[in-house]
Image (tube, rainbow, N blue to C red):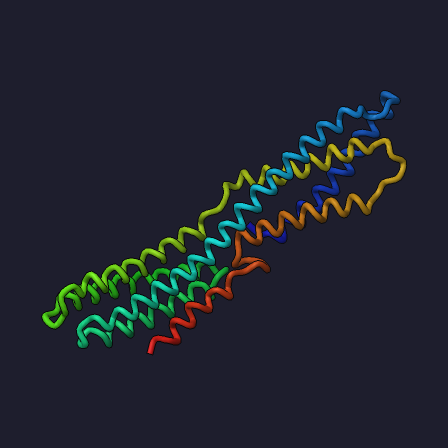
Length: 255
């Protein structure tokens, strides 16, 4: 979902709804000779209240998921760093190959995030990561079964590798966890409906106050844009790229 395009379309839709509501109200006045009933104000207030509630709900949820993704980036960097250190507990003969595999694996994880929002390229890196994961697991298991391995080595090395593999799945799943599309559709529909009612209620006014109309449309559209930007933090101006530096630091420490 492209936040900028959605916000621009919503801005235009709100202005159009304000104009359409005013024209509708003027048509009622022309036919009946009476001003629109003040009871419309109660309906308008209810719709605006529901719009505010939905904005608060979607903004809060997007921010929670944003913070969660940043925490997961820290967890992955820690998991890779810990698993790499545990190589020291394995027999010396198995260490060089595993260290090389970890360097290659960390490189693919860094490349995965750098290639976003190119989904196809990122998926290619994910597949390479999975292949390296399988090889790291096989090599680690084999190393713990060598005669030179100290007792209990598998209890030290294997859980660390498992944690490193699990956090990859968690981060991948997090990129696909978003509210149902109908939530955003309802948010946009409510914004347009509120604008339509507001325009209808102001049909009796002689002057059309463009400053307030433009301000209302811009504020709602910008709010929706920020929500979408936070919800998809690798597509817009709100990004979590800086937190990926932790993986780069881990890779630099792999001597």
